[in-house]
Image 1 (cartoon, rainbow, N blue to C red):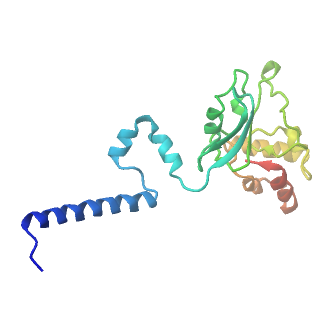
Image 2: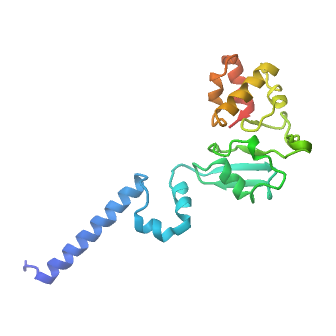
Image 3: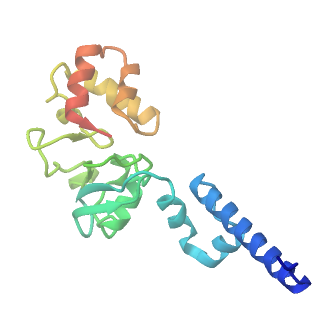
Length: 196
């Protein structure tokens, strides 16, 4: 077998280095590390969207209703937040009461994001979905809505709302286990009727 020439060795070396760089980049992409600085610069303002889509897992489908410009069902990347769903639905309507929901909560597949409307005098107008129609949004549930759940009375509903307000919202129904007066049976009722 003839010996390779010097130019062939250089070509083989360059191909090996290129393959090594491609392999390292592929391993980083699988590990969920952030994009290299050159890729982030090329993406410009879309770099934030890139980090959402790389968070892994399947997309989530959510129903955005209430005081938004384009209510409907939307597909969002895994790891998206309530604020992303509101933005996808065209943003809040003029009468939206955003203080009534936790915009930082992560979305779950099948979740309904209900943006409450500001009623007369700044009060929350009745939501379009009644307790019998589906899950109640933990981020915006009123005392009256919470009281429709088995085992929740006015006192416990007030404690839940106080806990939610004190902690800047809730991202999981399981956090309500820390509210005094809620036992295992009530937690089961809450899991069945509430969504984050």
